[in-house]
Amino acid sequence: MSARRLAAGLLLVLLAGCQDKPAPAGVQGDAARGRVALAQHACRACHMIPGITGPETYVGRPLVDLAEQRFIAGRLPNNQANLVRWIRDPQSIDPGTAMPAMGVSERDALDMSAWLLAPER
Ligand code: HEC
Image 1 (spheres, rainbow, N blue to C red):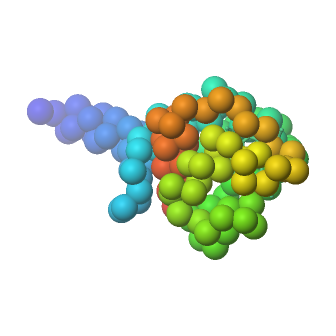
Image 2: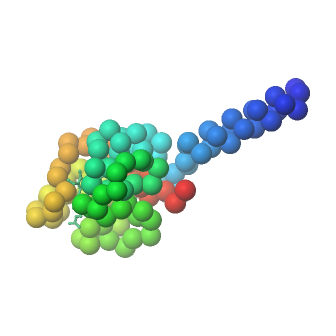
C-alpha cells in the first residue's frame, strides 16, 4: 500500500471516530443513533445540545455535562434509567414542567440518553 493510500485510510478512520462517539462504560444504547433521534424529535428547539446544531435557545437548560449532574430537572437522581423516564414522560415526574411528553419510544429515549451521558466532545 502506498503511503498516500495509507494516509487517506487513516484520515477516514479518524473522521469516522469523530462521528461515532463511543458510549462511556456502563451506559447502554447507541449514542450515534441517539444523536439522530434527538434531532428528529426537535429537542433542540428548547435545549442546546452538544453535537446538534440549531438556534440559541434557553427554554430548557443546555444539555451539557449531563453526566456530571446529580439530579435530573432537580427531581430525579441522575442515572440512565431515570433519564429515560424523564425523556419519555416528564409530566409524570413534574406535572407543572414546561417540557412536554413527546411520544419518544423506549429505544429512542435510551439512545438519546447514551448521547447525553457521553463525555464532552
Ligand atoms: C417545549 C420545550 C422543550 C422541549 C421540546 C424539550 N424540553 Fe427538555 N426540558 C424543558 C424544560 C423547560 C426543562 C426544565 C424542566 C424542569 O426543571 O422542571 C427540561 C428539562 C430537560 C432535562 C433535564 C435537564 C437538567 O438539567 O436537569 C432533560 C434531560 C431534557 N429536558 C431532555 C429533553 C429531550 C431529550 C427532549 C426531546 C425529546 C426535550 N428535552 C424536549 C423544555 C423542553
